[in-house]
Image (tube, rainbow, N blue to C red; front, side, top):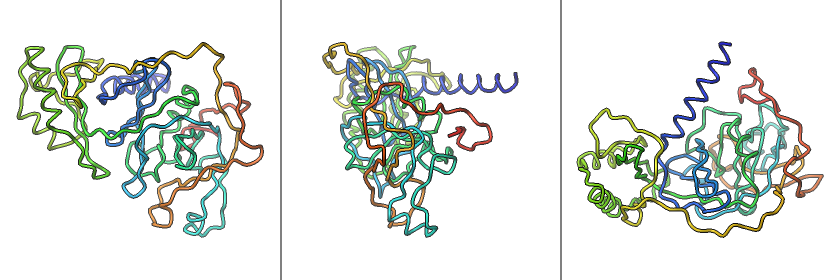
Length: 330
């Protein structure tokens, strides 16, 4: 009972943390699934039919091995992947290993989901180093805690849109109609925060809603870049009340961010691309930092070859294992 209570407490805490996560000013697709990954924030947002349904902490690419920004598609999935170690990392390891099978030593964790063109060598996957999430430390892939990666993989559909963005600020309104600002550090040194548009939006919103904004607090938030949400229209100590809604600040607007209209596709039986269990994925992974491991490689499925499969693939069920540091038994 004690473990059950603790597990429930963790779930409730995670749900509350997700509900309080600032939302970037990105227009999600009005229909279907849309993944948004904000690099400075180290968060993955999953929208369904224009509504936010899940938020996950993630580790993203380092400055030398950046996660590719832009629009991508979710590709095939591999449950219990085999990691084919790229030649550059084989030379670095010097242990003779060419592959690492599914298990607690596999840096891909229990699942790998292709992100974008295979030539980019990107994926969203689990990890055998859960303490590394969130962070800015991968070779370009988006790394999730293994239980999150499994949940995400079983939820997301192949072919869905995925937007990798670089927003250094989020401006949100909470359920009490207070304005909250969060600012993030600049891991890729892009220096692309449009403070003029942000301040214009704050001023416009305050005027429309007849609120007084603490301008010194705006300056302090933008300077500190802690990632925490700070109230601009309420006294210190006031707690944020979920849900949050994003303000369209990138255009200097006082309006809330609205979904981007996308026509609903004709109803068809859901299909997913699931490669055979144990398929080899050749990709830079782990936390090595040498220059030799900086270049990314493409995925390389082995026999049986890549193929499409129904939503219910013939992979072995993944079970919890309290003795496994990843929290997963492969």
